[in-house]
Length: 227
Image (cartoon, rainbow, N blue to C red):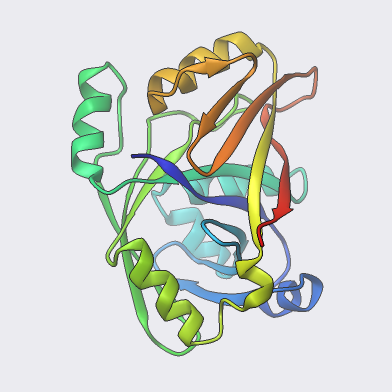
């Protein structure tokens, strides 16, 4: 099963500033190999990642799709960047995408050092795509711990509070040039049947909106109280 894991907002602020600006947000940590840092706002079953550059020299040298997209998009300012889905078997997902004709990065190992010094690990998978004004394909993640274990540990260390547990990301809106084309592509990638201009996943909805904007991107998210 594929579910929304998180949405990514590209920011020029430090995690410390982002925590002050956004209620329920905590410092995430440091991706040393990519030269980036983040702050995180968790909801009941997904989260918002505010991703920033910490070391520009390292970031420019990093051969990493998300870092390349971050550097590209920040040239025109802050904003929503892309979206990530979680899976319980990323190797099997990679095999299926390759079998269906999608070129991929292969499964990548990743880690982040948290503010407490804990190393949180996961695996990532990207669909090959040059950075451009075209809508970035989603990327995928498989965490080292189960979802329940990870959420419980975040509750225990205070990262997730009742404020976070009462929120859910109910919909993600994408501005695109050809909504039908993107709907068909993402339907094939996610193996979810379209409904009008949207794809409904177990924990959110993806809506594709026709736009003449310069760039195709995730443009907004909708949160609801989940009490």
